[in-house]
Length: 258
Image 1 (tube, helix red, strand yellow):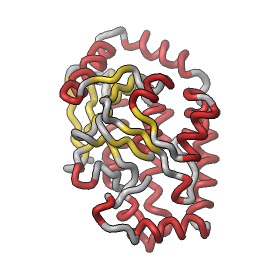
Image 2: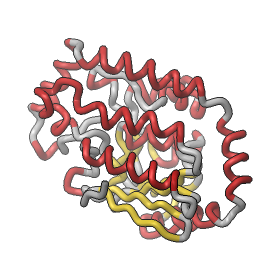
Image 3: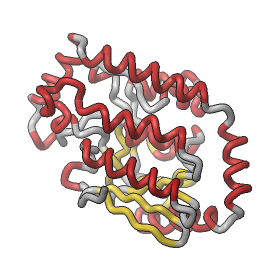
């Protein structure tokens, strides 16, 4: 599936997936989730592709889910979660490396997806934020397991529960991103590293990646627990109140939230 908001280009052994919905701060719609999942699945099947690459637009990687669209579906019931769940369940199953380049906002899933990536580059103006609890929800995409493992419990709680935005410098020191690069060179830096990775012996890369990532059974199980609790939270009074407050915000506020 190909749509205007998700640009997919294949070449040099790379499967480059770029979010191009800047007018909505690259907020992810159901159709975008489907397109991304299909591009990743196709890349996994394609023997000519060695590395997946995730990129955003200048000044914004992704502002998370487009809650305005999701809430409009079925009167808000389920938030169109089938496409979201397909994506988050796919992430730990990918066998090929993922390299991401972040410039600007990385909110909600725009941050949590990065914990599934093998290399992450970001610009100095990048901001990482996960306001799940502010919406009456809980962390997703395996982040309740991955973030404490990578950042430590205290910083994970600060990011995922307190909802404190993290700067690129702080994420660099915490170990999420590999380097802070200039805005003008974020794409080329990301693609250059991806090409270097793609040029290496594929089987050795895959075996090394598997060893580094370890047993993924627990991650898959945690994702399913998150899905169950997330669904329970969706019907809670807290979440409904938060969603109502979100819908009352002016359109200028962005129309996105997690």
